[in-house]
Amino acid sequence: MVVADRARWKGYGLALLAATLWASLSILGKLAYRYQAHPLTVVTLRAALAFVTLAGLLAVVRPDRLRITRRDLPFLAFYGGLGVGLNYGSYFYALSYTTVAVAIILLYTYPAIVVLLAALLGEEPLSRAKGGALALTFGGCFLVAQGYDPAALRLNLAGIVWGLLGGFGAAMYGLLGKRALARHATETALLYALGFGGLTLALWRGPALIEAVHYPPALWAILLAMAWLPTLVGYGSFLTALHYVEAGRASITATIEPVLATLLSYLLLGETLEPLQGVGGLLVLAGVVLIQLR
Image 1 (tube, rainbow, N blue to C red):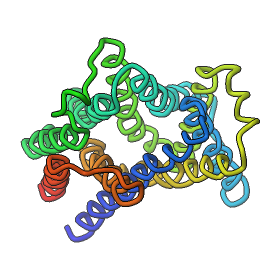
Image 2: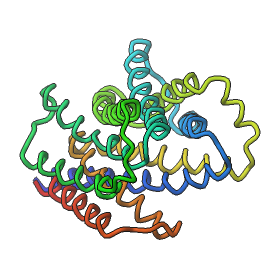
Image 3: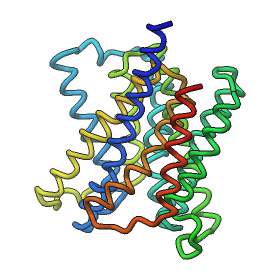
Image 4: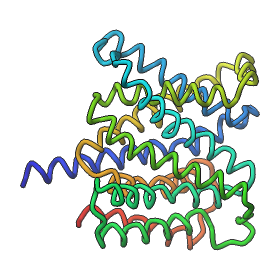
């Protein structure tokens, strides 16, 4: 029992670490966009640089982790294409059609998608604690994203579809990641998810990627930070968490990300923090605590 509890808390800790690192994307992204970098180019390079870095590290320290069989390729391509490519790209397109608030709210449907699909597939039970935690965290994300402000909402079909596709892609990273870990080491699953995800995004962006050759060194430094911290360490931590806790529980725990992102923007960029956003943060925290205690 003690060993199981330690493993469970380790899983929650890794999911929280992942969420903390993902929250830094809000800061790094705003710094990158000051250079007029195209968002889809940025997310493509983020995945590609993370892939190249991890491949280089594994080639030196664990070359055996690079090896997969031919029959593994279709699943890993599907995993990377959805969990990374669709996730990153759809969120960008949602932002181009609607507001940041709507895009965030739709993206954070992903824990509910994970919990419901896992239950339907018979992989993870659906409990009252999960339902309560989902309600608290989604409500909290709604407030943190200022969904209560009509000025922050611009609803249209294209924005809703892209936002939900982004949420679906994020859900697939957790659900398919659990399956990938049944056959592969964490590093191997992460490597090929990033590789196929980066390839999907590169095809999506097309020849316009050539703009990156004109990026200044300062922007490349920001891109490397995005690739190494929230991507390599963040996504690696989340995948590792799936060894210890259910994908649904890890996803609910990671909803702390928008709360931390808002707090970082307030502390580092001087952005305003409204009282209702604070209430939303407390709701998310309550949901995260609930799922960890039950």
